[in-house]
Image 1 (cartoon, rainbow, N blue to C red):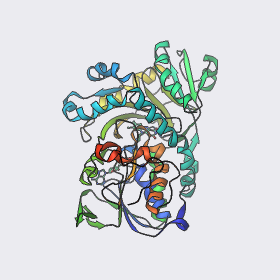
Image 2: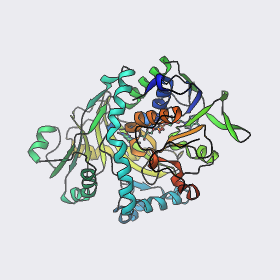
Image 3: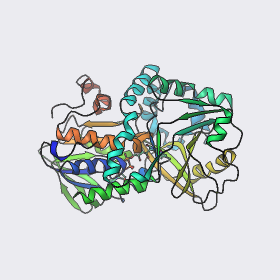
Image 4: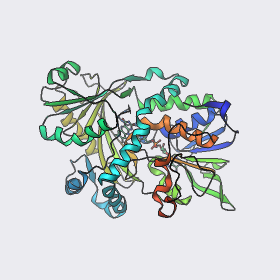
Length: 438
Ligand SMILES: Cc1cc2nc3c(=O)[nH]c(=O)nc-3n(C[C@H](O)[C@H](O)[C@H](O)COP(=O)(O)OP(=O)(O)OC[C@H]3O[C@@H](n4cnc5c(N)ncnc54)[C@H](O)[C@@H]3O)c2cc1C
């Protein structure tokens, strides 16, 4: 929750670079703290990866992407483009450092550490959104829905054992459903499933782009400035960053927040903090008139994609393709989702289907960076939210506002500190609180 104006230490001129879900929520909460905030993006707010995600605020996503089974899946990831996680060969040399770290992150101790860290923030995702939605007049754009994971085969259900056990270990509610209970909950699904698991802790937005747009409007109404321009560089005076160079001119700041999603890597490097951030590109296919309806967000455990009901139709969303951030989309990956979805939902109408691709900002350990810069006290990083950027946007915005105001953050930010990627600085990381003196 924005612990608002009263508690802000002082008002400053702040630039938030990147108007995705994370940047918009951050700018909004900083503006509510009384700062003079400029939000810069080359697209309209929410126009990047935040535009086409599945629209879920997931409070049960406490399992990192790399898990102990990942190593065994690597050959298929490289050879079979139908795999949910696929690496484009051509990009392999560029992606090799990421992939290596990703495999190291699949070691049991790291998986346990990531999961424990996620469990300190993810269950609070919706709680953090609630006041932001209320302040933006957008509460009616979000409804409780739950995630329903369905499995046609015993093998697919067994494949989810680790993830479900991890969720349970972190205190997340996981309900096994009988076939009869499944039919009652989602009558439109084909009777082909042997197993179903329901995770109640998920909320569905009517459309993530609309929700982010509503928060951006509230930001503007609170006095925030939105500048639509590409940022190209930073200006430094005596080693200190002082302005963002944009195609519309320089924008000076007292403080800077880097919230450029999958594009944050060169900016972090420029500020002295290299990060192994890469794009795990996801696809969706939007069906404007699907002819069938769902009550929950349905996730195919066999084919690893989600079907979510949005205001504009049914969204088939999923796949993770590792390629460089600006590589052209491969539309076939989105279109492949339709025959799979038809298997689950007989009678699904695919007319007018629209494909889309967005670059998830992914770090190998599946933990976002929510952190002060160790080199520049005026800079805060907020990126790398991977599969959970919509879910964690409001919580991240509140945490950044706390860091800027010098308030103790509501959650321990130590696991999300950018210094985890720097061997020399790792030893100096705080353990109890992410807030350390500039
Ligand atoms: C298919 C799919 C389904 C998903 N489903 C979910 C879900 O249900 N729930 C969930 O929580 N997450 C989901 N995600 C993940 C989520 O979408 C991302 O984590 C989130 O959008 C990241 O938000 P962001 O603000 O960090 O990045 P972005 O939304 O990408 O914002 C970054 C912004 O920076 C701007 N930018 C970059 N470079 C420049 C520059 N030089 N100058 C100016 N502007 C610049 C871009 O234009 C962009 O608007 C999904 C992702 C995909 C792909």
